[in-house]
Image 1: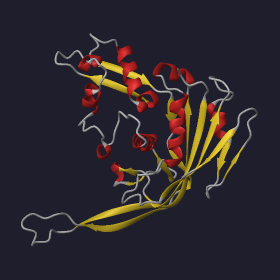
Image 2: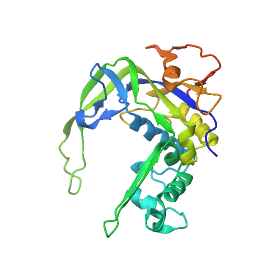
Image 3: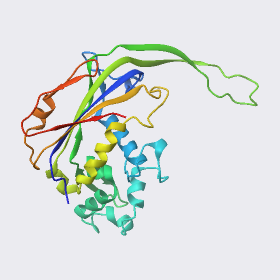
Image 4: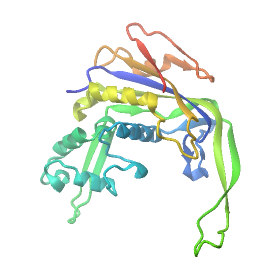
Length: 279
């Protein structure tokens, strides 16, 4: 089984007084491009999507440190400990063909058969194995509709001191950054031809479709307080054939988003856009 129809989608979300995606190389300021437009990377969006799918009970390979459900300390350990009925041999190219190892990994983990994964291992005799898996689901980085206004606030941070607790430790100074208000949009696609290689099917596409409107559930932190990030709308285009009626570029260009979150859709003959409210 594989995906029966090409799918394109768009995600419109708003940010209010939050840091949607800090840049660790720039003091954790919200990411922006050279023209001042806010950016949330595709890696960040896939991380949130993985977390949401994992919370929904799906088997996820790339788990975040704070949301691990299996106690594994690394991706290598998670891969090796997976119950394939072959033990460590599944990632030994001399004993298990790479194509079979990839098939087993795709069958076990939803994010692997969706986004792909590179499994690279070294062995004791230095004869390593590299298994690349190209996934059918792609997501672009999200960009704000207008250049963002960033507010930076100086804060004090208290840390635990040593001793019996009678002495107060010295406070340290720091900075906290936020985007005051912005609307972002990102686009994605699901490719039936690539899904044939990973086993990604219609049921998996529906799992992602269900997760996207709830993308920011359970994602609150001091940088992103509860309610500060909200999915406004998911636009879902399901083509009537595996190759697609239109190119993804043309489909994505049919959506125009305004700074207030409203949008317009240019009708494409024979291709209906399903508009899904965010939660």
